[in-house]
Length: 435
Image (cartoon, rainbow, N blue to C red; front, side, top):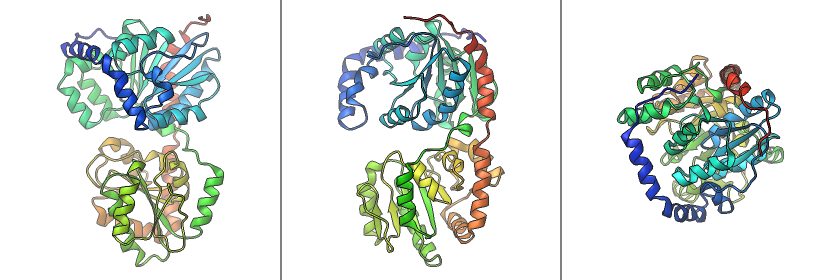
């Protein structure tokens, strides 16, 4: 497919002008972010479009995945691309420190990580001039206007895979339809995550829409350090437990109160709480201890003891560890009206999934899991308590529910469909080596 020529957007022209004016302060902002741990100070040059790593010879395929979830989901695709093109290299860009660390450990041979440049004309130009990618694959929903338009202007083929568009983003783009159309039609092919996303993209003027394909349905399970897993399981022993995952402000106290109610009837109950933002650990611990709960904090090296009621896992990069020990997981951000967190990560490891009613960010995935009876979408915390009581009281039922969730999360078809759509683009890449 070829990109559709869309009407030029005045808004995008204004955006380009405004970001050009922002250039002088970009370095200052990045240094401040680095001081706060949100950037890698040793790699700020990458964010400013001045990479130091040399370009590898031969065809270079660039894959952009915004953060941890997207980058994990794209790992099987990276491997499949490298199998398809044994002469090529793959560069994966992300924008977060955590995802960079993850990619450093998990990318295969002939693949490497770089930070995506900030969306300034000078940074984008430096990035593209240095790397000269032959194909660009964008994952999910992070669409940077300067980067997309300049990549297209240089004649670099682009595809948007596992495309996602939340209700909020759809409404925002709906107020700028010319801008949305111009950006979306820069792609030769767009593979939406689900039918609803496809319909939203089509209403925004997107052409070149391909098969529905959600790569997160075929991502690899989150990893866990075997020694850390053994140590955690030894501390837990045979105690019944459940996990409140990726919680946001207010949900930790809600989980603690659910624990208090359940613990009257479930002897030895342990509740694991993993906040979405571990830096909130101090505030969470203070609030829960003021409520009288016996609490252990992982970030402080506090072990789970016989009297520990709540285990606050306020660390980064260990979700695979906690999902492996929890037979039942309540997804965060689903009880407080903010749209939910990704349920596929615990499902992939065989956990039974519970959620509140607010699942807008991942509604199609939640509905798939619920249809397979691997998840329950509940109207409020009272019904969450009922479900927890039932599943914790019947471990066999929890295991069966987790198995159904795992079957949904291990479907290989999205990867196969994505590769089928990309194969003509991959086979058209040059074979000759580039300096």
